[in-house]
Amino acid sequence: MKKRMLLMALVAGMTMTAVAEERSAALFKVVSTRDEITVGLPDADADAIAKVLVRDGYLRLWQFALARGADGAVVQKAQREVVILGAQVVRIEPLTERGTLPR
Image 1 (tube, rainbow, N blue to C red):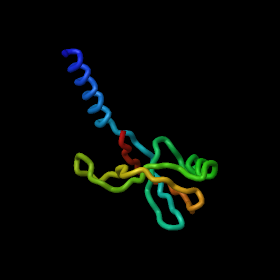
Image 2 (cartoon, rainbow, N blue to C red):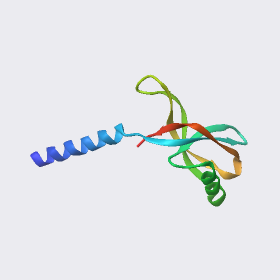
Image 3 (cartoon, rainbow, N blue to C red):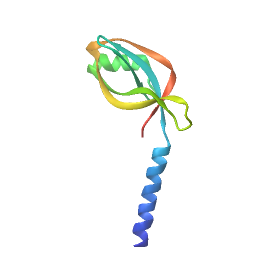
Image 4 (cartoon, helix red, strand yellow):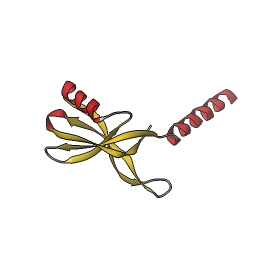
């Protein structure tokens, strides 16, 4: 019984650590024929995104939006995963700020 409780506490601690650690993402504005959205990927650049869009025809990314951080500051946070189709992309613009990805 003690081993089981210790294992559960260990798993809960690992889960809390994973939630507390957030990954940083490079942000890009993707302009399409319909609209424009802010997306992000960890350690990516606009050329890499364009190459994948040309090669595969689509790319799954995180869409970002402004939100309040834990300290009350306005930050870019991931909202949901989206798929971008290469045929609809007009241009990709890198942004200077960075966003936060969920674990």
